[in-house]
Image 1 (cartoon, rainbow, N blue to C red):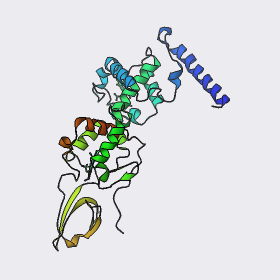
Image 2 (cartoon, rainbow, N blue to C red):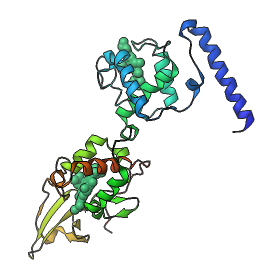
Image 3 (cartoon, rainbow, N blue to C red):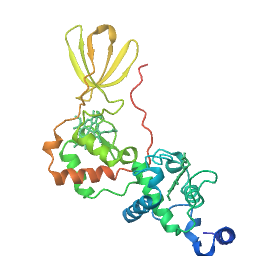
Image 4 (cartoon, helix red, strand yellow):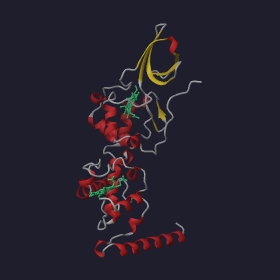
Length: 283
Ligand code: HEC
Ligand code: HEC
């Protein structure tokens, strides 16, 4: 780092400490360097999340609820200050409280304990901030291929596209929901990947995933990977059964160790989420 920036930082840090000494009783002082860190030094370290969980239950749950889902005070799992705001701003908010409300300051907590509670809150609020799932992702990657998942799902740029790309799945969804997607595919269908069955007036039956529809056309991606555009006027019927095209028998097909490794593999798909433009356009 360049030297002038470094010393500017040090001065800033000193300034913070000086200000703190003016405001906070001496016994309560422990504003060290990490309090002025822009980012949480603990990230999603499992031990930090655990410590934050304990602290939260000692000091915060009484107002914010057992799982931070809100009680007498705000739902912290939903709130912007936890999900999207800077972690440094969240740090100050927790340290200083919110004057004029019941949200108390925490002058006596060491910096690292405030960061722990932030790790904990973010792990609840943001799927990508959960500590890594246990299991062997490497072995899980093999299960992913052997179980046929790759024939319908892209990971790392390769795979089929009947189902959604799973590249950033662990940023979009918490591990519990991913587990449910694998074991109970019919419980909730990913938007843009709903099943469709049509019969045409000339007697064909076509099944697949509905990729697009408008007043005059429907566009279907068949299980065989073919894209079929049909005019509504040629259809005898169109049904959208509330069942996934994804096999529903992984519950019984996968040994529990394989399932654990598979889920650990999916849990590592945490590249920053880039929204995928779904569907095809009909010109
Ligand atoms: C005595 C009750 C009480 C306690 C204890 C408490 N809070 Fe709060 N907290 C509040 C109130 C009241 C607000 C104001 C916002 C609201 O309720 O809508 C608030 C707001 C917040 C916000 C901002 C929410 C937003 O909408 O942006 C955060 C973050 C927060 N609290 C974290 C904590 C943490 C972490 C602890 C424990 C170290 C804690 N609070 C302890 C009552 C409390
Ligand atoms: C025959 C194709 C097919 C196979 C094989 C398949 N899936 Fe899927 N999968 C789909 C489709 C279609 C969807 C979207 C509908 C739904 O939500 O069930 C989906 C949805 C998902 C989702 C939810 C994605 C999201 O963005 O919400 C996950 C996770 C998933 N599959 C994982 C797997 C895993 C792991 C395997 C292998 C064990 C697998 N799939 C095998 C077709 C398939």
